[in-house]
Amino acid sequence: MSLSLQRLLIFSLLLFNATVLYAQTPKQDKDAGLAYLKQSKFTLALEDFTKAINVDHKDAESYTYRALANARLGNFTDAISDSTQAIEINPKNFLAYSNRGQFYAKQGNMTAAVSDFNQAIQINPRIAINYNNRGTVEALQGNDAAALADYTKAIEINFKDFSAYANRAKIYAQQGHWPQAIADYSYAITINPQKAIYYRDRGLAYVNQNDYTRAIADFTKAIEVNPKDYVAYYLRGAVFYNQKNFAQATADYAEVITLNPKDIDAYFNRALIYLRINMTTEGIADLNKVLELNSQYARAYYNRSVGYFQLKQYDKAWADVKKAQGFGIAVNPHFIKALKNASGQ
Image 1 (cartoon, rainbow, N blue to C red):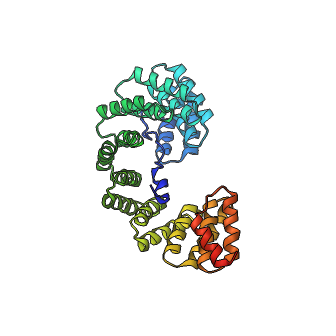
Image 2 (image 1 turned 90 degrees about the horizontal axis):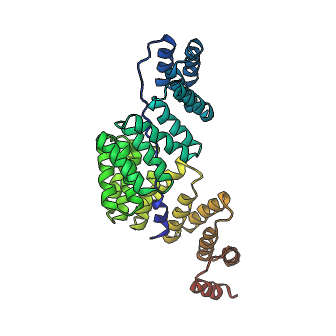
Image 3 (image 1 turned 45 degrees about the vertical axis):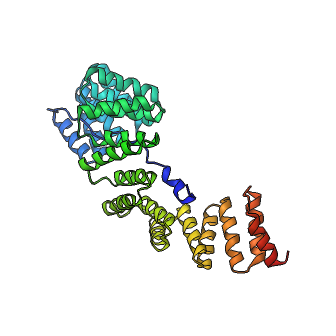
């Protein structure tokens, strides 16, 4: 696989299902807190749930919901504390276990996370979210078989759980089971066609099936769904690059750079194209930018030496060759011979 496609193997991280279950809340403060929670006004929600707790210290629901507000504010320690309090008040509160499992996972305590998801499932085995979330933790720990079983169970319970399909697809993709991955991404897209990342990941699966037409179509759709998705531009540009469609590739890399000016790979790949199509000055400019962003980028020195050779700036070419070799790059002996002959050294 070419260097332009090496980055294509990096798939997006598995995500927890963000669905939140809401119980009935008869008290005014809880109702107000839930309204703020749904509006993403988490500080105001926190204040109202605290008011409810101050009135009734045994209100497990208010602790459960305040935990969610704390988590949304990044206060995971407080979120765990509130969830624990809710569980102590009501040991059958599967929502508190489920949420605490996610909070533990966010802190990297995967053992505690799995334990809480197990408890939530034991209390109520018909909630798909808990299988999905436990599967995500198992996947993060490298337990692919357990993760696949949990995602499959989540789909069995709720066949419209697009997140479970997408997460299962990621496992299939990591295992190289591309047809299964494509099928699951397709289900996820059918259920939720507004998730750009699903098109991107399915496009990657198509790349690995050498189905570049469908891959380009999926990357294009991802861009249509989210015009600021610079990753989709990069991926499409990489496919165009490998098809030697340099005009389209450079256009996509330009979009990447516009949206993410520090994307080293976009500068580097565009530089390679410029060197191939005799836009040497532009190629050297891009390689200069690469080295500005990362002075240890050895391949940039090597390829810039080629650019300087093309411009007959042989001293600069030799300087970059030595820098590349200093980083352990094996410079093509034919290039060294050509440089010696041209420079008289």
